[in-house]
Image 1 (cartoon, one colour):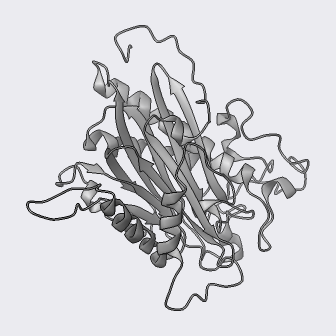
Image 2 (cartoon, rainbow, N blue to C red; image 1 turned 90 degrees about the vertical axis):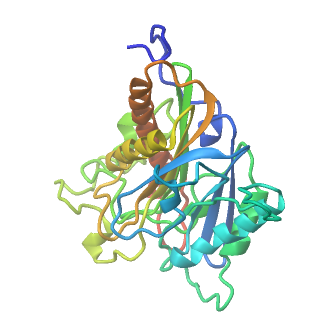
Length: 346
């Protein structure tokens, strides 16, 4: 079936950067605080973009996600924020909102003298990571949000960077990941901060659950220990934080994007489908302890084609694969920090 009224002859390939910024019109900025071992990641489009969201974890923390409901007034968003810090991290979006308003970005109502940007956000729980979260009356997140906004560009760091700085997985350091793919004239990308209760590693082999979705060797070789010294069987909680009854530092938050023209309802379906990418790369996922959230954005720079439902189905599958790969890259790029080993050092 044609997505653009022509034969499908393309192969899925990573974009030139293998980052979400391969989707035209998007930039990303990271900022982190080494002392408090936490960080923020900002996605900034060159103009407002259509967005949807799907929340599946049992312990979410979000800002302005109801506005993304297709039945609600807001049509587009001005930025998206992923942050550490649990509820304190929601303050990152506040600083970004004020800054974007000063730039003239946002919705203006009537005689309102300044625009009101729409900046949805999601947070993860990293309050138990690192030696010190005693920040008193001034949590670092507002400033980290501003620093992340100032740092936006086409390229950005992965692993111990941005919202991924203070993240952990079941038994190894988590991180920030990103990946992209092109197919049949469209580009999709994913950006994710990986901090689940569950494990990103198959306990039978020690390799990434995401390995079978890898493109062009993007995860690099597995550690030398892979295939030896790991659990012989596959149990529901194998390798997860729940095995040690330490489920207090959790949640995977992500953004998927495409250049195809989508409505808010279609962007919401894209976010729903993209959640499958988490399920392929993390086990268990969407637990009562995780606040797993996926935003989806459309920059609208590529026509959707005549058969929109078929195009959306293809884009949802592509976005889910990108999210799986982004999770794999987050763990592969992470470095040891504050007593948590990196996968490559296991």
